[in-house]
Figure 1 (tube, rainbow, N blue to C red):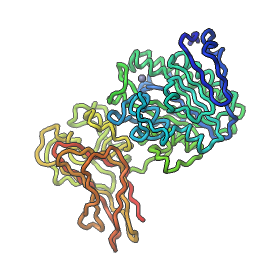
Figure 2 (cartoon, rainbow, N blue to C red; figure 1 turned 90 degrees about the horizontal axis):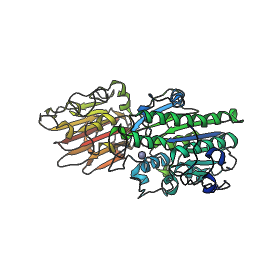
Figure 3 (spheres, rainbow, N blue to C red; figure 1 turned 90 degrees about the vertical axis):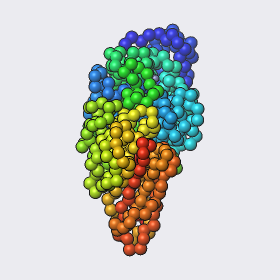
Figure 4 (cartoon, rainbow, N blue to C red; figure 1 turned 180 degrees about the vertical axis):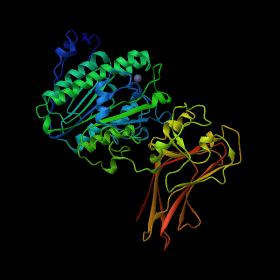
Amino acid sequence: MPLPGISRRTVLAAAGAGTALAAAGLATAPAALAATPPTLPNGTSADKVLVVGMDGLRHDRIDAANAPVLKSLMAKGTYGRSLLYADPMAATSSGPGWSTISTGVWPDKHGVKDNTFTGKNYAKYPGFLARLNQVRPGLSLFAAVDWPELDTHGTVTPGADAKLVYDNDYVVNDALITDLTEQVLRDQNPDVLFVYFGETDEIGHNHGAASQKYLDAIAVQDGQLGRLLGAIEARPTRAAERWTIIVTTDHGHTDAGGHGGSSVEERRTFVLAQGPGIAAGARPVDTRLVDVAPTVFRQLGIVPDPSWGLDGKPIQDRSTDPFDALYGSLGGRVDETGIPAGVLGFTHTPPSGWSVVDNAMGTGGVAEWRGWSFATDEFWSRSQRDQWRELNVRARGVFAVADSDEWADKSSSGAYDTTLVTPAYAVAGAARVTLGFTTLYRQEGSQTAQVLASFNGGTPTLVKSYTSDVISQPQSLSVAVPAGASNVSFRFRYTGSNNWYWTIDGVTVTTS
Ligand SMILES: [Zn+2]
């Protein structure tokens, strides 16, 4: 790609000891020749992390693109794909997306719902560079962005020892960022870097994700990523360093181009990570976008304080969720019409040790949702858009769902009445037992949702009854263990009549 002269106003801001270039100086000379990188403080860590953000990169288009660097990282690293939220939690836009990546929490915590950034709460949920600057100030931290909102709103750059901030003339400035970051990586000693590229999103908007131009834009960015990785390999001290590379995106695109809405194509995201302790060739089903920041912390040996309130986990940590074990046995649609036939994502067969009691269920209805099902985010949320099924953000992989609304989309008789029963867990000698899980519950009418406990197989007693919306929140229900009890099983009983739904995921049982 030729390096054009910069015709639009370009701003380079360098914090700390960095070099500031006058915009006028850039206006007449090729970018690569005109610019010199800022000077960073000397790094202090042998563990180093490069995070590369590619805006609006729909991962299912990478296969068709000339992208050898991304494909090599997938082979050598772990590649977790998932879906975003949608409104009313947040739009599938860059403000919420990069905020989620940077902070490691979902929009209901970081507060950014769209590109106005109204409601941002980075004071409580700072980006990972700001957090690193607080907890390990000796780290040498670098950020480069050409969507300047990530600087002006404080999403990414606070805490950086040096930063490059350019306007959104992406063809020019993605290349400039590559040139300068390459020099920083090769010639200096940074510890953690966040580098943003925007051209994939721009081409997505202008030509659509189905276009050849979009594939070409992926190929260009792949080459830019390759230059950064080459600069790392060229470091004289490379052999003594442990580098982690993370690549991610903030949202997808429609085939025709555009995002912000609730289609699966707009909601597609991924986290791709390669480095020490991260499995080669892994394709976990339990990765979500909030996992970028916790993976950065893990690779630096930093244990997040619970007070940080992170929603993510390191990409190498597998969830212990028994529902995820069902992933390989999920099937395709039966009665549903809104789910493409090739999307495999539901079963009625519970995990080993679990059971579903449907003897009070009516007959007929949509087969997929007759009583508790086990489903993926994509399968369930494709059943009907814009009814808040997209908000199940704290579920991972396969989760349990009881959905009287979708069941009622085909003729049926009788009530929707279904109970999910856990295995029996040992409680002998314990004073209390605590049931943890995450839930998305949407209330309507006479719908009921109850958690019950049965000790030693006795009559279940009510622990909790849900009577209002719970939008993807962790739950912790503590129950006293009766004298002499040796085990407990829990029940999730849902009844409804063409109302809404209830999801359960990440069930844990602990005693004290
Ligand atoms: Zn966009």
